[in-house]
Length: 243
Image (tube, rainbow, N blue to C red; front, top):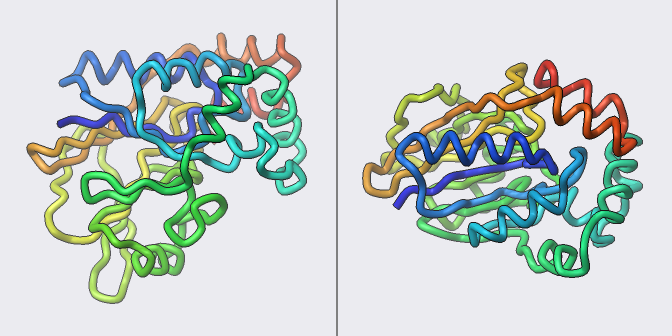
C-alpha cells in the first residue's frame, strides 16, 4: 500500500492538482492521508475539499478548517489569516461545511498517529523544537506520527530520551525501521521552508519507506486568483519565495 501524505493544502487548487499528478506519474498511490488545513489562505476552498472527498482521503482537521466552520475563533489568528478564514466561510456549501466538521483531530492508522499540530495538542502546537518533539513522543501510542501545521518538512527520530531533527531528503527512500519517528511532509499550498514548490510525502508499507517529493505549480495563476477574490496581498506574495 502506498499513501500520498498531504498537509496544509490551504485552498491552493493548482498546488494540489500538481502534487496528485506528480504522485501518479511516479509509482502512484492507493490512499490519500491529509494532515489538516485543507482550507484557509488560498482561493479555491470548495474545489480542494471536493478533490479530497473524491479520493476518499483519510484525514484530520486543522486550525484553519475549524475556523472556517466557526468551531474556532478567528481572534486567535493574525489579521491576514483571519480575513482569509472569514472569506472562506462564505464560499463553502452546507455539505462542505459538514464535511470539515466531521473530520477528527486525531487518527491512528498503520501504526501512525495522524494529527495536524501535535499528539499533545492536535490543533495548535507546532512541533519545531526538541522540547515539543520529546513531549509528542510521550503522547504517542504508535511508533510513528505524521504532523503538519509548520509547513516545514522534516524527520525527527527518538534517540533515548532525546528528539533529534533530521533533514527530510528529496526523492530518496528513508527506511522507517523500528525507531519512533515524527514526519512532516511540508506544505502543499503554502510552503515555508524557502522552496516555493509544493511539498508532499509517499509512504510505502511494503518497503517500509517514506519519500519526500516536490512538485512545481503555476504560482502566478494562484496569485492572480487571490487578487481577484480580494484575499490579502501578503498571503499571495509569500507563495513566490516559499516563506
